[in-house]
Amino acid sequence: MLDDPVLRRWLVRRLAGLEKAPPAFVAGQPPYLGPVTPDTDLPGINTDEFPAGNFKPPQSSIRIELPGKTVELVPENPAALFTQSYGDLETLLAAHRFAWVPIAGAAVDPDWVAALWWAWADRFGTGDSGWPWHAYTAAERAINIIDFSRRFGLPGDRDESHALLVRHADIIRDNLEYFGEHYTSNHLSNNGRGLLRIGTAFGRADLAATGAKIMVAEAGRIFGRSGVLREGSTHYHLLLTRNYIDAWLDAKSAGLEQAVMLRDIAERALAVIPGLCLPGGMPLIGDISPDVSPAYLAGLTGKLRGGDRQTWPANLPVDRQRDVQDLIAANSAVSPDKLAEDGWHRFGEHGWQALAFVSPDGWPPMPGHGHQDLGSFELHDGAIPVFVDPGRGTYADSGYVSADMHNCLTIGGVGPVPMNRAYYSPDFRKRIVAAKPVVRRTREGTILGQAGFQHLSGIGSVERELQFTAGCVRITDRISGRGRQNIRRRFCTPHPVVRDGDTAVIDAGAASYRLSTGGEVSLIEITCWAAYGQGIRGTLIVTETGGALPVDAVATLERI
Image (cartoon, rainbow, N blue to C red):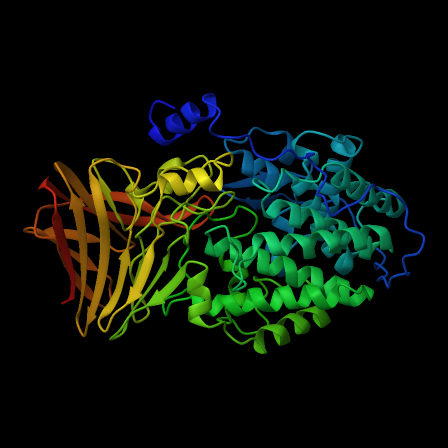
């Protein structure tokens, strides 16, 4: 609290009775769902028969890839996957979710999956609480085992596995992740997906209908008018797009009436993806989910051809793979103007292309997976990513959320936006950030007006302009106000960098670039994350300006 003046201000107003508590709600009970009662009027649903399983005890060790960690198991102790200590909670949750099964692709070992399912059921199958039975985790585990079983048969005793997977649905339904209108995230949608998938797999129309109802209702909460996920993360948008396609496939196969609506939601989410991609690939703006890697979902970008066994939907039956590929092929991109209304701006000229997320209200999304980086952008020169958003390697690393690790500026050591909190009301947020960011296109590029810092005293307007010419990008930051300020600008690149006088030379292999800032530059080694817990070496270029406001700070990037 001592480090957050905005929080202090809210607390003072709250104690004075000027800020009300969020509206009352009942946790776990979204208002559009009634009490849990059997619905005898529901029509029956189509369901697939699982093939007969034929599993034997594994004879050799296995290496399992979890987010941020590789685990080696021996046949004598499969339960070690669930009982050993992990430094990151997300690694433990991935083990309980059987998250490694779909990403193993053609290399999945059915005998090991069966052995681990037996080990898990023996230790945790009779429980109903704690992290192994967290609703999101239970949904992911059930879906991954169901998809596996459609290919190889139900592991373990068929009747016992059937009953245990249906029990997952009961626990999910009793622990839905609804936390009011102000703090319900994409997790509730995935709870619904778990119910839908369990219901369609085992002929439970009541579960399938409840799950579909949740997914359709929550789509209105989590997606913007353009179809983009409102949480400020490109990877999470891919993940939720996959989830809605996945739900549509089962709803269609089962004959659910909600299949049409689920397909419409999935198509709108798919239509966003081309607008989030640059020539060198999709920038990983915002958090990276531990569920699956961005590379595993690359087929949704249309960059991969069918038949790649290491990407989704390769773990699905062939007919469903075709349905996904047909859906992607028939997709039409949403208009850039619509996407810009929801904060995503793609722009550039002369072979340069940039993508920026500018939250429409000037705050990081809440709940969400965006960062405190208003004014940041990712820049590609053709297919070469020159400046990148480094992503975030783990949820424990708050440093990669801050402006200090993005292509933006800080004033007096403070980033452009305050930390958002679920209990801040819309009126309080407007009180702190009175003017919304404004993005304007120009002949030569783009200007971001009201680029943050409204929560700092002594700062007037802040504006960032990007101008593109044939061999150069000019980045101008204009800061008005009073007093003396220390201004730092940062640029992240995945390439080696050396200092040359007061400039930084970036070696991108096929091309080189010189960054000139009008002052000294310093270089800091960072990680550019490619997946949760996995990254490559990158460089943060930092330049500092001090003096009396107003200031115009210019950085020039040239091809050399």
